[in-house]
Figure 1 (cartoon, helix red, strand yellow):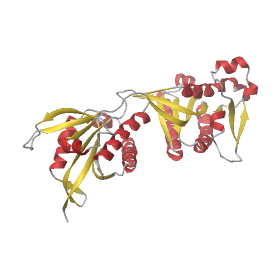
Figure 2 (cartoon, rainbow, N blue to C red):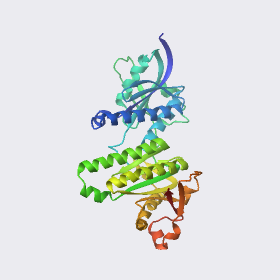
Figure 3 (tube, rainbow, N blue to C red):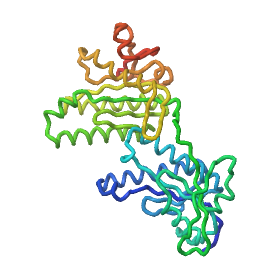
Length: 354
């Protein structure tokens, strides 16, 4: 049975998705769509929203209030940028968001009405990374919590009266993502392998490397923040999950080492990330990279898989495993080597996976 219901709508849409999809395989398209839908749905859920209709890579989400919808849209934009930190502006995924409110005719999984049409009209003129609102949505928005500005008055096809459109003034300054377990991984020997192997072999290795990193993040709550050739930068919210992920990575890398003769140096630290647009930086990131570089001092031990953990990351773990232990490294390094690695006040431990 069809019924009208006053509904707050947030519509999100990936910008310029067609050229991006043309460069992907069917499997890659499916994975990206599942991941993006999960991201949109989970962010909406934290603000009491739920997806009620899909249109390709666009989602229509219902909220109890316009303010909830705006706060969800802001979080989507900010987190999407943070998740893709390190990617260039042309490579990253961007969305546009439109928020309207009005009577909608709900019939099963279908939704119809002038509010739906207005949402589609405003969507066409919304730029990437922006959040636009209809006049009705702007009127009931809590303006003490969300700052907006007037865009323009538009004459939309099918509407007898002009429609005023507003945009949310988002703060685009530097964001701090606090208390993250930061992982920096460097495939040692990749340069030599690249020079000697054919392109099919290089491609096979890179795909296997990428699949491994993404599967570990998916299983242990991590995020791939940046990829630069054979360098991976990951973050995890939980220290125990981070160590568990490193154990899996080390064990699976033994097979890669046997087949490609490519080692792995990893640094693990806990601290804050600074994010501006697609850029990630900060002192804690530098410390993590320095920890990974400690591997150059221990090649004589014959172990090509090296994981260095800072004391700050180590003390936050509660993991109790018989197959894992920490070996202090500071007493094996000279003062000059420690200064060279720029570890500052932090002590280093080697993660030994039995």
